Image 1 (tube, helix red, strand yellow):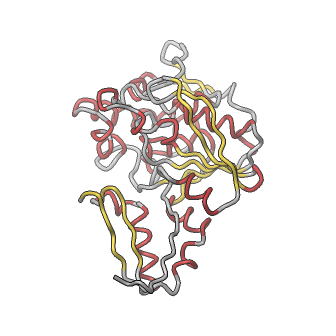
Image 2 (cartoon, rainbow, N blue to C red):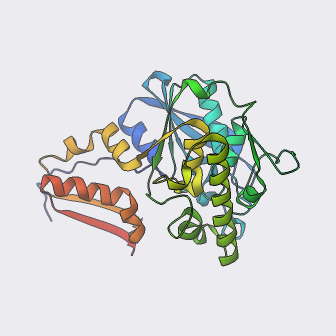
Length: 299
């Protein structure tokens, strides 16, 4: 249609799937692969990126704990765990990363980040003082009474932690992790209710024992509450994933002078405006006075 048009392709992401690939295409770095536990405990190969000569690690929750790793029959957030994501984080720590960015989109889990925390040496006990087994799941949250930090990874305190969130949902409640995203992860109505109660219970335990008010944390519900878990167990600050990646890739500067911006996603719906990449691209384009066309697989 426009044979003389100059097209500039700019990889972009919002902290979900594609974040590592987008950054590796623009920033200098390398991909690290290792064997971890998938969301239902099966061993899988998952990877992450090391940038800045190994100083910065970028980890997608979806790589080890993603919904795409499970068949529809295996999708059950009462039984899935973010443990494998924690294994990737631990690997990055042991390779000497000083800044760890965890993208929190696309997870199969609603465990509040407890599985991830276990892989980093944080333990959870029930009312009898017994340790919860490794790979804590959404169905175990209401059993947690004590958070045991005695054996947490010694490198946690020496790292700058960033949780790149692609939604603004809080941990629980009407717009919380379980009620909004539980059904698409395989949760029935009864499961959604149990998961929401479990996340609320976990939030109260975290506040009581660690003094961190994760129940009110904007974006804390991302990745089934893993974002809230990162804030509680690592001290991570939550940032908008799109804005973080856009800044790292120089998106706004690259868009200046364009006559038209094309963006898109597999599905555009109400959730798109909770922090997804197409909405972010549209905001930047609007500020620059550039028209935008969004292409969606479905609406």
